[in-house]
Length: 372
Image (cartoon, rainbow, N blue to C red):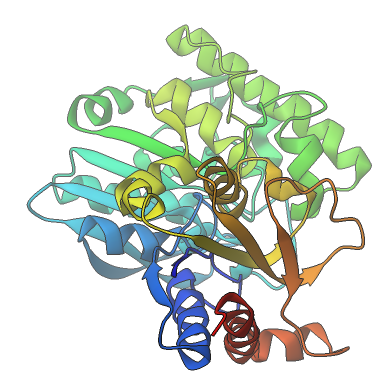
């Protein structure tokens, strides 16, 4: 029997690679007759950097940049010297995990722009940008400022622009982007399909996760529309309702408009790099998982995608989750979804023992999968 092991990261606990290793250890302890193939996955969300670097053979470099609230942070990015391409994870410099208190009117993506500038200075001709886990709803305002785009309120330049400035911006000087577009193609790996504006847009759906209350959601929706209008005036590209545009507080839509960034589903591209199809064709069982498998798993998330592909290939599909909601029926393509926690515990304790819990659960599964 061959088991294909392809978990996502268990956020703030284990990387996808560590989770895959824990599952493999448990299966091997259960039976030496179980063959395993490890294909850690990601979908463009927080934790994608290490997975992509693994598959593309890049090296990690670290530099100090501005965090979401201007604090200094150390952020890594991947660089492939021969291919002249970079892998940048927005969450490394501008992630919600980097702040203790949510502040949507001040949190920016400036540090991510610094990473992009660093890659451009190395001579990058291709940048792969993953944008999940953002702390801000700034519509890439920080990224653009770091790259040299200027913003104005009338004739007054807006220094060090923040999301709170979005509604008063009425002009921008984006001449610098021509040189960037000529040098480098930017591909954004997205983990959601939401548009920039509207009831399913960046502010309405993801704003509350970043600290927006109801009144703030309406303000940010109008503010992002203002920025999208300016992009359309400047480039002729309409980005208000582009698929994936709402990702990372509107970063995807605005960079699509100004930098001609290509927006693609992150999970599918990463599986392509991983050679997932080859392993799928020689496997009998697929095990995937992440911190929480729920109804959102069906919509662009890595475990949901591999579960669907596994079922289409005729495999048994098992999901391992840090916790399981009472209503699991709407979660498609899984034969079974199992919680890995051992009895009632606090979230902190559950996260502390994720590796051991995954290993133990995989051991029990291994005993069931092999019949002597």
